[in-house]
Length: 111
Image (tube, rainbow, N blue to C red; front, side):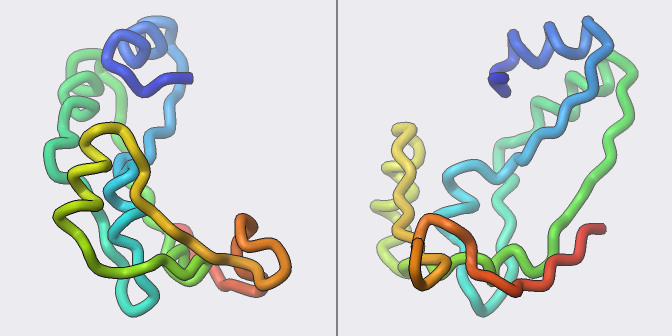
C-alpha cells in the first residue's frame, strides 16, 4: 500500500499494523559500504499520526544492510534533487551474476 497521509490514516483507523521504512529514495542514494547512513529529515508526520491514533512506535534498525549492494558515491546535491522529484538517483550493484539481487552471504542483524 501507499505511505501517503490519507492511506496511513485509513490503515490506522482500521486497526491495521503498519511498517514504514522512513529513509526512502534519499537513504538509498546515501548508502555506502563504509558506514550506516539513515535519512529521517522531515519524516516526522508518521509519529504525529501514531500519537493521534494511540499506536505504539517500535523503531527497528538493520545492521549490515549497507553490505547488500554497492552504490555509486558522490554528486549528492544533484542526486538528492532528483529524489525530491520522485526519481531514485541510485546506481547499485549486488550479486555478481545478477546485479539487481543483493550480495550473497551478507550478515544482517535486526534490532
